Image (cartoon, rainbow, N blue to C red):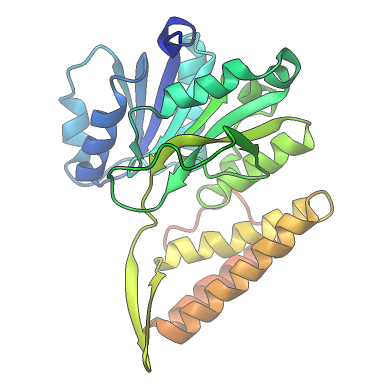
Length: 298
């Protein structure tokens, strides 16, 4: 089988914001799999910036922002740079995502197997996300090489630069949260296809966890800070307002999970009033279309 590097050049784009240990591991795992790596740093305040300044590798370019531009704007910076360098394929990664060594080869195996018509309609190929620590996996788990998806998360996307140009990139106004959903829904509404490669693996973290002991039951929830809750609420309203009629089933499912998120926060987190205030402010701003006004101090 032809090595994907003989046919396809890839530029990876990583968005960094603190978290040097995670970022170091992510770069280490992906650097030999791609032709170019662009890191966009959103004004890290820890030693991440110092680490990036000292990187001595011709394959790596770093863009330093003087403020936190958010995920969407930073992604747009990275993909525009990659496109200007002539790359057709862009791999987008979170700083806490670990790429399996065969991920890209499996993705391009799927792409090369598609008929020309489907290749033209394809916007991106996503990996199978594994929410656990990096380790061995069963590469024969799935019988079908790929399935079509409505939405996928941003990290691990192998996306065409021409497609991003066609839909004007990521939505800067969303800042963080639902950036991936918005992108995918716009792609689908424009007739593009999104595929998930079943045998391409990306190991991804879901953030902070909290162990809950309830009577005789124990379970884990994922917690978020107040700023993140604000954007979750505000951008949820944006998604519902813009895609309810074109993507009704997705919006209904997302609304159910959003209600569960609020209930979980009210029942199991310590500062319930602060959480409620953040959710309420986000909902209010979403209804009144206050996008692009990033609420760093809530």
